[in-house]
Each structure stands twice: as structure tokens, then as C-alpha cells.
Image 1 (cartoon, rainbow, N blue to C red):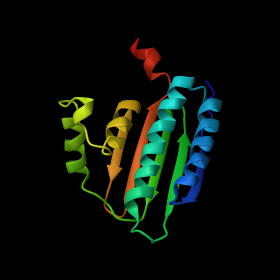
Image 2: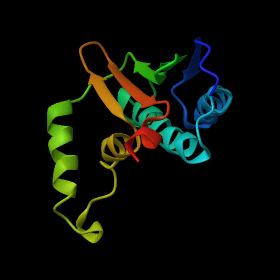
Image 3: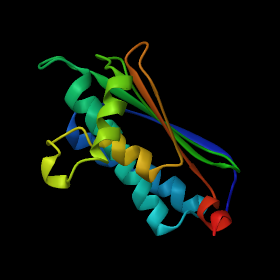
Image 4: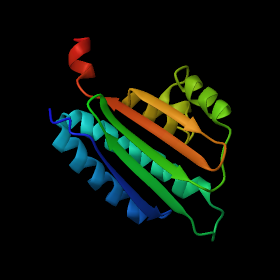
Length: 149
């Protein structure tokens, strides 16, 4: 695996049509680093969920906003930071909701609310900061699945 450290920052309007730009940038860096296709797909889903949450929930209707995405690669893995300056949310309450999803059948889960669950399921580490806006930090380690086998 190529583990040359690199970092890129992308700033997009908080609009759904721009999320694919983030996915493309992530794919390019992750492929160059040597992540597997499955790992890259997992990361793309997690990043899409984080960006979609910012698009849907960070800014009031009619209010324009931006989303800053920083993708950092080093020899340990990749770290993706998704940051908005909009409305924050109660992360502890949201975490309790996705923990309770384990106890329900899929038919009983309401639409929405699965984004955090997916991020935690697909990434090695997820951190959410809600002090000024919201920042979601997603981490995937290089070679972690191989080491676990």
C-alpha cells in the first residue's frame, strides 16, 4: 500500500448535488493508498451519510451554508472530517436512537436516523463534535481487516 501522507480540503455548498464531488475525491485518495474496493465503498457510504446530514439538518430552510471536508492520509489510515457551521444536534440522544435500532426489526425503524448507525458500522472510528456547528470525524485504518483475520 502506498502510504505517502497527503491531505486535501474541499468546500462545497450544503446542497445534495455537490456530495458526489466529495465521494470522487475520497475515492481517488483511497485508491492511491491501496484500500480495497469494499473498504472504499464503505467509506463512500459513511461520508455520504455525514454530508447528507449536514445538507438536510445543519442549515435552516432557505439559509445557504457550506460544508468543509478534509481528507487526510497517513501510514495508519485515512481520516475524513466533515464540518458545517449550521445547527448542531444532541449526539448523545442520537446515539441512543441508533443503539435501540439493534433491538427493532427493520420494519419498525422509522425513515431517517440510520446515518450514524451506518457510519459506526462501516468505519473503524467515528467521532462527532457538536460545540460549534457539527464536525464528524471518520477514520479507517489501513490493513485493519487483514490484521484481524
